Length: 360
Image (cartoon, rainbow, N blue to C red):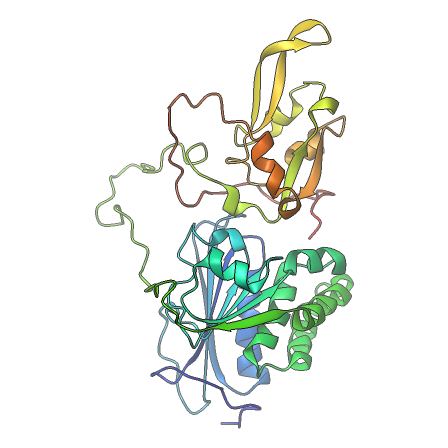
């Protein structure tokens, strides 16, 4: 057995340093977990394991990635989820409140969040019990560096850990994905460097403001043992009854009503009944008129932007329009119930294309 480059700064009762990443499909958390797994085993001299947890491979669905490191003299005989992470990466801040991303976080945890908010405001949003909170604006850095959010998050997590060398992490990225995507390598390395450099952090004591959140396994009423036969889907109407805001990757379609010619192309291409058309008047004639988008059900696929012939729909960074979204939000007219209780997290089934709007 070799000697690790750096001793692990902290371990749990089993001798493991544990990392958990909370994300959605499409942001690269699964790949990040594999990179950290290789980093620990092949470059830092630890014993290492990594695996991910996700459902159907759809863009926008919740994803968890787990990494364990330990001394090379110790075997890893656990394959259960990381319940109390020493290092937690939250790739999408809107997951907070949708799924229990802060479960198991205590005073010994370091939480790295992709957000433009400051640490105090982010703690309020996360309802963080205690520990060190690190904020990095991974989305904007990724856009500027022409890389993906996961590279920026890896750099920030390396900095937050206090012991993962940036140069070693860069070498792993060069060795693992540099040959496959050589044109993306400069942007990936810039993303790592800026993620490492552009963080703000603060330690929060257990001041009693927010309770500790226990980690519990997500369990459904139906499973393999008691689900009805015949391929029954218990979550009927899964698109229309869900709040899809947590599946967006940072971009939304911005609607300019004055430029809309009511052609219906957005409605035709939208998979989620987002655009609301009602009988009205256009250019002095009776016509179906576009009232605008229902942002509860928009998963940010931007197909409508590609289809729009008049630039009435353009790509916008969601966080820059948060104050205006609800002002232009139009409730789905086909939902006739008086009150809609949205489920915690929705699904996202659109498939990547060669879209010119796939910016990161």
